[in-house]
Figure: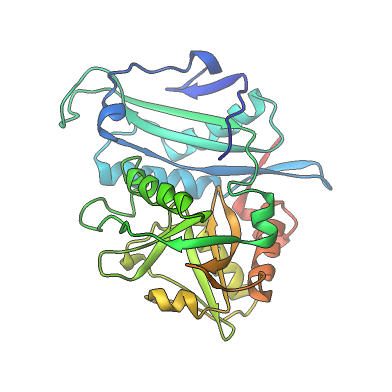
Length: 308
């Protein structure tokens, strides 16, 4: 768990407002029905060049637009508007590195399942936030357990939509994992195939081959997931998208999780079956991911938006 650290400003509906004034009514539609979509983005500070970069900002804002399209939420701000707002917010708050949370939600004015008539509010917050699962997790790995809670069906809440409603499912799995002594849960889909963590995509390595569940198995189209697949290709690491069973986790040489908040986190055991210390493929991909994110890999600079 990571506590929030307040800063000075939040961007909301086209304006900068004070952090402690960024409130919403208790009868806002999204608070009652989970009718919101959001993103999680990171900004990294390279201590060598003393430059700050937002990682894959445009891709995140494009996914936010796709989520709104699926949810039939009318988003009046363009991708360019939202990218500019995020950069302005980071500058206004004088942040060198931070986590960025855009959210689009139905506000006050309509109660009941049908949100028609409720105003659409758009906000972006940014604040300092360390490693999601902790610095030690990134170095030594975490213990994970397969959850008894299944991932929501693709015909219930589409996984291509990053919606707040989806995360009640994840909360159930996370709380169960904690009560069983695990740092994270791994969720199966309704067919019993491996899906993802509560907030991360999942990869396994066996005999030098990198595998991850396909989007058709109900996983979020993760931007860090795509990043890892691109880096693996450039490093000539064979990789495939394939359905995975629970035993594939037990028999893997390496397992790791990816996400904008989690970054790249090794898994050292699943359901009490040891996997071991983070392996060479995980380490290579982890190290190269951070090289890219910190602007130290020239071939990937087009993924970065510099904060002046």
